[in-house]
Length: 225
Image (cartoon, rainbow, N blue to C red; front, side, top):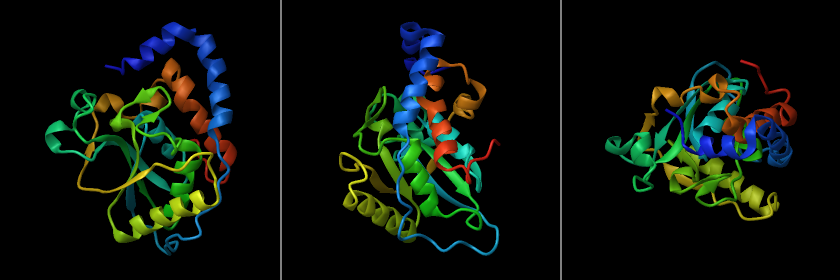
């Protein structure tokens, strides 16, 4: 099962056209943003921390963070609603409160939350689009950070304020900060979708350029894993 949106892109553009458009989107997607002035202290010992991020289709967000050094896992799922509606069919009705999200688990001795958020805002999505991302529209595609501690909330709040004050984008950031209640893993067919379907026109147009932008903007953090 695939998202129906990939079908109309394939018909409209064809495989060759999709590759051409993807290159153009990739160059426009990347933003050179300053590092956060407020961040967590890098840990001395290896451990695991997690943050849940939403910014459009979870295929692309997952793909970006799977290529980020220090990230142990990136899992597609749903956050913001209840267990009863944590499935793709229900979320697509736009009535559940869920956002397509990715749980990013990282080693804080290798990478900090601030750096993860810098990547999130720089290459993973456009944080100025309200309830949409590229061709995908609806509240399930909203830009959001689901925090699980006061420290995570404070770091995210201060970074958003820093970027807005610096006029880093042409429009205000609309990313919502929401307390994480529960993260629900998405269906198996959504996991590793970009990696397993690199020639899907939707992936070529919308998601592969983000990974290329990560490699270009953050070469020291990029990994082929």
